[in-house]
Amino acid sequence: MAINAPSSPVDSEISAHHPAANLWNPSTAPISYQSIPYARSDLVPPLPEFSPILAAVLHFFTLGVFSLIWFNKFHDSLPRLRRTDPTWTSGFWFCLIPIFNLYWIFFTVLRLVERLDEQRHLHGLKPTGCRPLAITFCVSLMIPYYNLFVALPIFGTILAAMLQEKANEIAGR
Image 1 (cartoon, rainbow, N blue to C red):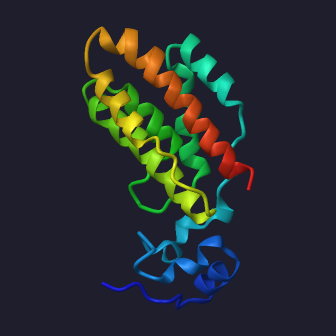
Image 2 (tube, rainbow, N blue to C red):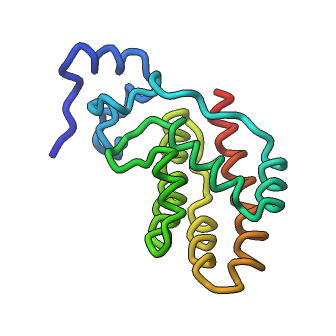
């Protein structure tokens, strides 16, 4: 199915003022961003800027609780491009449900990396490059003892700093 040009006045207004207006070429647009009414970037708060080093330190000393809250809040600061994009509340609370959280941690972390990459693309920046580390982090969280001694303190701390640094680049534009 081909992506059509904006048809409504709202879509035309969005495409005239939005950095994604040139994405109507199906070969470059992964999704029809403009056609989704809840994807308007002017309706979401900006990404919060925060020190990547402080994010890493807080992640380390809170054993990941800071990152669980802080990075799930990013979901509300990014335009929802899909109906399945989590909100901050679903991203956080579903991580606390036993058994279901084994699936959800993969979903919320990888979707956050994907959404940051999409926003970086819209702002003319290179992808984050965090996806392999995010997958490694999520998989290593499933291994008993390894998750406490390697995944959270090492992979999680590095991922927290990288995600915050990449989000700061978007917020600064």
